[in-house]
Length: 114
Image (cartoon, rainbow, N blue to C red; front, side, top):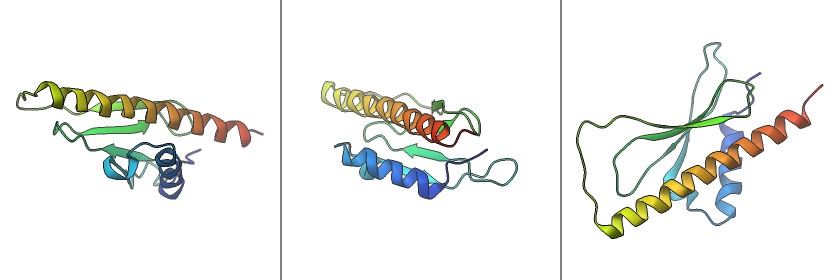
């Protein structure tokens, strides 16, 4: 039962942003079609000091759990202490966002249980 449509995820990101996180600066909700053609949800996060592609997605349609995926890099990169601190803060925000999405998914599933 896929339920995380793009409009729903955008509303959840707006809510997350309302908590004080820089969601609109770093986070995008993309169209993601499941194997049956349904909207399954995919969120990308842009990192300011690393070009690594980071995305969040549900473990499986109908499940509350989400995963954070870091795509591989072909090249190394070096950061100053200040840049590393900013990257650390961004990764903490990504982790918090993932937990937020799991909580929203759990609440949705529980409220629509038969």
